[in-house]
Image (cartoon, rainbow, N blue to C red; front, side, top):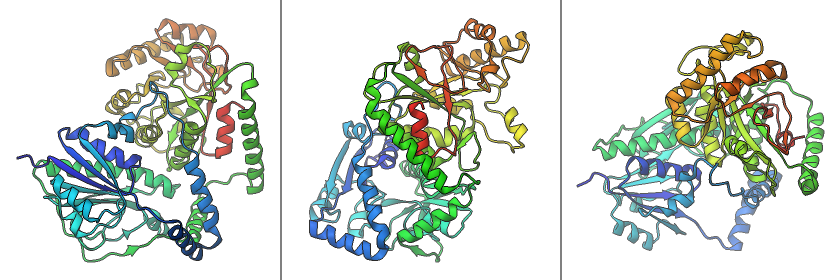
Length: 528
């Protein structure tokens, strides 16, 4: 008899992290059958009004803009991504619904007699609680081996909710994620697995939650694999801890002010707001008038790092990057760079066009950027200096800035990214200035970097990004050497947009970093 043949999932919704968690287990254990029960309570208009009145009394005036923001986010659904250029399709609800081994049910009451009857009929070996409401023993005891709960918090110190908030409120140096066996008391069952993440200097609640989503997916998958192998990890929780409840909106605003105070000094608030209003107005007007623009255009965006450990002109915050990718998916048609080069000309489109690229090869590209790109189904190209991959070297610009060592990606990680549908390109071997170095060295770097990418990743058409990216860092003669080395195109980094015909040997890119507020980002992405 198999240790695991049937798994029942109890969930509060089928958001991206829940779907990805299920798919990650399904990929590791492909013969399972799944019953997924989604809690979808139905409230009458009277119940909704009473609930909002209660929340208004608790939160005060802040509840009104909070509700308006939530309604707006529901109305602004993202656009459907292009099939060819959209990684992450295997983690969508549509893909989960298409699996013949998965049955999804929406239930108004997870503890109703009909639900209990269906779960018993399914006869699950294991239960998983992924963002579900509080479950009763009559439900979570039905699976033969018990039910595991994913709790995004350190147990026993941070029971209850919400994830991350109270750890940051209390100034903790780490936040945690715990998988535990369910018992009657809230978040009190034996621990099956746990892990922590360091709180970086500029961490935010949403940024840490995005990281915990990925950590939780790995933890749950690994515990389920242990159970499938006959191992039952189980460690009693210490007899201590505290149970937290949802903070007030005033407490949320207070924490946001404390976290914002850590940031480097920027322009004054009034000046910043005026700039944002102007840019938002220009962007909105451009969207209305864009059909009258003679030449269609595409903006290729350039990033280097996605991290909360730094705030400089090469870094973008984790929460900030997530918001920017959501804005791209909502307002733009996002193309992959190879797709753009194959088109030859910028196509007419009912939405603005954009591409996303990264330079250098920092580890945070794999750890932070790739999961967010996958979540929003955004294609991207990563240009890596091949001599730095799988090494402890420092880039020349990091040495000049006096930065400590910043971890870099490995070839295994690049293979995984390439297999997921991301583009990998060349940034030379040693991040050299192609206009300043002798001919022999430049030609050797071009050929060696391309050969390494072919050998390690099996690439065929490879695009080149020259280091530093300014007009002064390449010459017509040396661009000929790029062509002679067998590259399929070349991208710069000195700004500008690509209008009309695409010059595959001078694809212009615009840099993005942490100082870009949302309106500034839209302004830049549209090509102003």
